[in-house]
Amino acid sequence: MNRSASLPAPLRRARGIVLAGLAILGLAGVAFVVRRPLMMSAPRCLAGRWHGCLDTENGVLLITLVALPPAALAAWALARRRRAADTASAWRMSLAEVGMVYGTVPFVWMTMMPGPGAGVVPGRVSLVPLRDLLTMGPVGIGGNLLVFAALGFFAPMRFAALASVPRILALGAGCSVVVETAQYVLWLDRVSSVDDVLVNAAGAALAALASRRWWRTTAEAPSERPRPAPASAD
Image (spheres, one colour):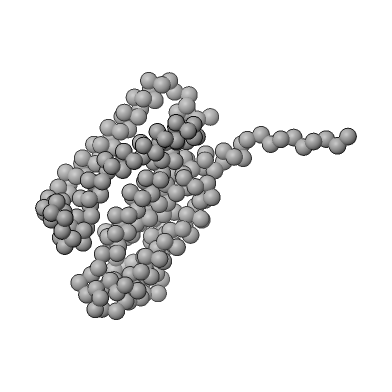
C-alpha cells in the first residue's frame, strides 16, 4: 500500500511544506557557496553577452538558478492541467518532464562549450577504456556522473518503457555517444573519450537506482490490474 496515501491531508500538506522548505534552504546554501563566481558573470549575463556568460560554467550555473522559478511554474501548470483532465500521477509526470529538461540541458551545454582551439584544432578521440579516468580527477568524474543523472532519475518515472536500469544505462550511453560525436565533428577542442561515455552512462544508471522506489510502482501498476476471466466454452 502507498504510505503517503494513508496519511491524513494535513500531514501530507505539512510534509510537502517541509520538503519544499528543505529544497529552498538547499538551493540557498548552494547559491551562498558559489555567490562570488556567480556575481562575476552576472553583469555580462544581464547585458545579454555571450562571451563571459553563456560560454562559462559560472554563467550557465547562474542562468540555471534563474530558470528555477520558471521551471517550477511549468511543472505546476502541467500538473494542474493533468489534474483537471483527471490524469493519474499528474504531479509525478509533470515533475519528471520538467526535471529531465531542467537537469540535463545545463550539463550538456557545459559539455559542448568550445575550448580555446575550437575550429582550429582537429577533433581528438580516445578509444582506450579507463585510460582517461586518472586524468579526470574527482571533479571531472563527478561532473561526468551528473551529465545525464537527471535523465536517468526522471525518465523511468515518465516513461514505463524505460523503467529498467539496463535500459537507462543504454540510454545514457547512447546520449553520451551523440555528445562525444558532436564534439569531434564540430572541432570543439575537446577529447571525445570512451571513458566519458562509460562515466556518463554510469551516472544515469545510478540516478535511476536512486529513483527506483517511484518508477517501479509506475511500471508495475498495469500488471496489478485484474485480468478478465476467460469465457468458458459451453
